Length: 249
Image 1 (cartoon, helix red, strand yellow):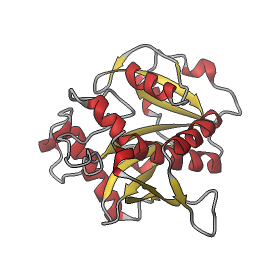
Image 2 (image 1 turned 180 degrees about the vertical axis):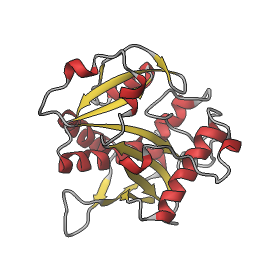
Image 3 (image 1 turned 45 degrees about the vertical axis):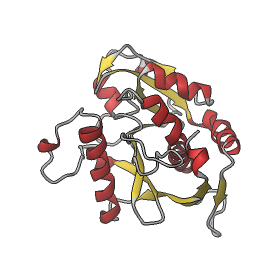
Image 4 (image 1 turned 90 degrees about the vertical axis):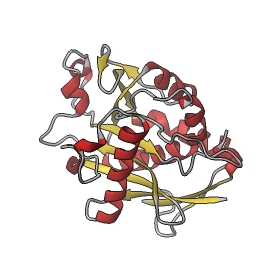
């Protein structure tokens, strides 16, 4: 069995943050070809939103970051979805008691995405901001990586509840929206198609609507959560055990 730690990573944890940024560059550059690795001489994929974001990582038993996701908290900068989607209906749907954040940069390392006896050649899961999948076998990769991706989403969900965040924004293509919908993650389209690392649309989802979907996914994949003793229900660090055949579903 593979033991993974799902953890919120602070900017002060420089070694882990560097692993996250290196993984992102590898995925977006080498794996997907959406950015030129030569434009990042330090080997790190970062942007102006990272200091304003909360970062989450999946860490294997060797201490390696094999998956990551971020949640951008509104600050002095506009959220990416607001920046890219001025034509959308976002503002028409805002209410005084809504608190928004944007989830993006969900990537998974190929070290997890394995068949029982062999590794696949590609290792990305999702593009920037839940953007379009790349490579011909991307749907197979997505199936193999779903348990890890949903583990990361679970950590973002817990953090959102603690912080009083009521809604998530995301940029994604229709096929991914449909896949999330199948698993109970319902996002509403709030704008037309734009080109951000491929054709995507802006979506919004209500955080509380995702609690049941996360619990159902865990039960379906027979995850065993090992929570810390001090905060058993809202731990910032949770281990999951799952066998290779479940990863390969």
